[in-house]
Length: 144
Image (cartoon, rainbow, N blue to C red; front, side, top):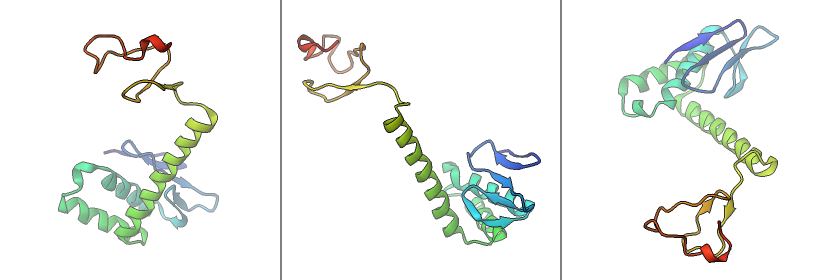
């Protein structure tokens, strides 16, 4: 886990969350934008995000203690940090879903209408998984 700092941002190589320097000279975390922070608090916020984003640390008491200390440094409790980071992740996933479905940035797929498995397959492609190397049951109905 490496935290990097530039003139206007503080970030990590493990998480997409960042802290940015505002016009008022205070730092703001992307997952906690309403709270102005000092540079030390911003680094503690990024470190907190790193700890909570690593599934390997879920049962590590020392990591949870460090996460609690980091949350205390930025002025919130650990439970609030977990909820705020969760909401940030859900918001990012919702934005991705909108981009894929409404704007059409996702892969072009077609749903088989007459197949037995209801699988989604890319047009012009066929996989033999589940059919033992034979043709698809719906191959005579115009499916590629």
